Length: 475
Image 1 (cartoon, rainbow, N blue to C red):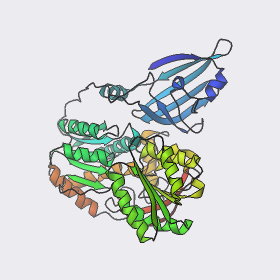
Image 2: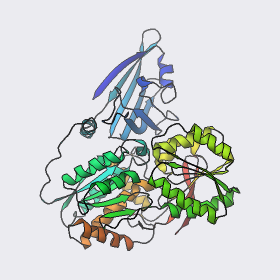
Image 3: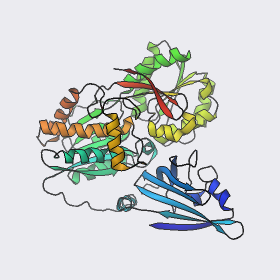
Image 4: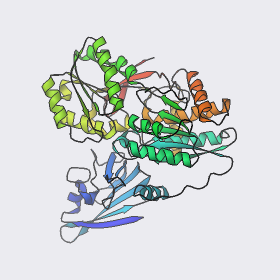
């Protein structure tokens, strides 16, 4: 347990009321949330000016789990490690407040902090009869906002596989790494996982990070599975597999429908300055042309952009009545909040290719009316989903991150890998990659635990009152 005190010249009620708003300074962990109530998502900055090895501030993602106005706020955070932060507001002098911040740091948190400040913590030796698999997820950086459940779901899948007897009788051990939404870190962590004995690595990261991983490892060093929405860059190696939604299918499903519903025809495309958005915009342009629409403008921004004022002004000047975003995580949150605040949301239709439950929660009311198409939603009434969510909450508790298509695919992929290994016990990544794709090709339908991961069915939805209203599905 770590703790720190600070005194501010404000009465407790006023100091408490600043939590989560623009007046929330470092003494309130720069907290950002739309409401101070139990269950509300919140983002905090690591105490004591914490920075990772690359010099970036470390953001904690979690939920408010207890409040007692105006004296106490408790936050359970899930990223970049799991822990709890308690803020106590006590009177100090005639008109001040002493704010005590208590931070629980688990062994996993200590390990994360050491590694991200340049230290090395050796992993225990690989035990006989154990199979190590790796997960690289974005636990920090801009992409972290949309994949907080990836590690939780990987753990659930591994636990279920081990209960069923493991991989051909061998226990499965999961090693998790954080790419920090950075391709160079992803490359370093992939090499580390291979050195530690991982023969397969599941990646819930950006396409830029996954490409860096594939280029950093010799072909055959490990089976690499990109287990989230991606643009399906071609690879000749059976050791590289990409699954999940494809932007071409998303655009084909949504572009014409939105134009018909809104009467709009002029599109402005907003994306990130790397391969994912380049490919997504290329196929979206085709879908727009097929629907007899026009592209009024297009902008690519660096991953990690927080000020979209120039982009929004460009949208306004373009006269576009429809906007498509391929932005990722925190960038998408910042853009959609600023776009709604500009007043343009009420004048334009909005399509987002990476709008998931976690991003929706953090955007808050500003997400109202955004359209999307995904292969899984937490509220989807498909076979097995209710039981799956019960197992997830039973394993990880009430405050575990929301499940979304970007993370549920990790769970499906690990189970699919286990089935492929049972059919083809050959330990070489090339053989396992072929067996994985063959097993995936045999899947049809949308039932949880057996979803089609190569060409998944898409559910069309609109953000309404903080949830997704699913109104159709397409094969």
